Length: 364
Ligand code: GN1
Ligand code: MG
Image (cartoon, rainbow, N blue to C red; front, side, top):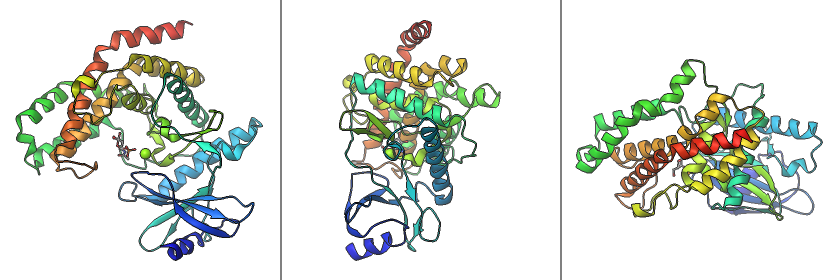
């Protein structure tokens, strides 16, 4: 492997003499390596991008270059210290492209930020920080002049996810759509479909904007320094135009579930309202410069939308015979679906409290 990895790195316009290329982290989608150079030149992070999930490498890298460039300009204008630790920096290939294709795989490279800390899992404190950090990320990108594309087409488009589910049922490749329990879940889904497609309707009516969002908001996607200060947001492949609900709702879907998304014990699934409060406080603080009343008003909707959308994606994949989400056992997607349905219902039950809490925050 080593010679081949050195050869790949040699196609990038990096500084320094490469001494080692070694696996880094445990991402499920892309494969990542650390490239160590001799002496004082920077080290790098080399990634092989999974183009079966992100099919348009030019669009993907164009988004990332625009986003990191725009954030860098903002940090420079604010005379921020240590900018290279606060925004990712990608290095072009020797032919000037932002990636290298080796005939089989697509590669890209960025500067490694040393002395960082990563976290998984949330505390009430980190939920606040993540809310503020992702809102700040959206705020910095609110005036980006470039037109960005969707790296996964219709990724968080609820109408399209419903259509995908209808197609899965019509095809019924696995036969699982006939299962009585699946039918019950589907009835729960379709009863709610119109309500949950509200964002797309508001968008068509010109009432709801799309903004540049991260679309994979979790604490794992933030780098901290040794003193627990936020450095920057990472994992930018899903950065694309979306409703702000994406970043708000998807974070809470995982962070405010009292258990993991594939816990088969439904008694353990509930909505952690304390996490909601802490995250929402941080988010509203960070979003104050851009958020509109219709966006604020729909934050409870956003909180229920993501367990619901993920439920729709899990059950569609179950009916399709498990072709998208990696499964450890045959019923895995069904277990995930039951879990997300339960969470959707718990969040729905908390609407009055969520609304009251947001109103209270705004009145402050
Ligand atoms: C996938 O791979 P991971 O866990 O970061 C999916 C998300 C889903 C999540 C559900 C590109 O994310 O949208 O919410 O699984 N990412 C993609 O576990 O489809
Ligand atoms: Mg990810």
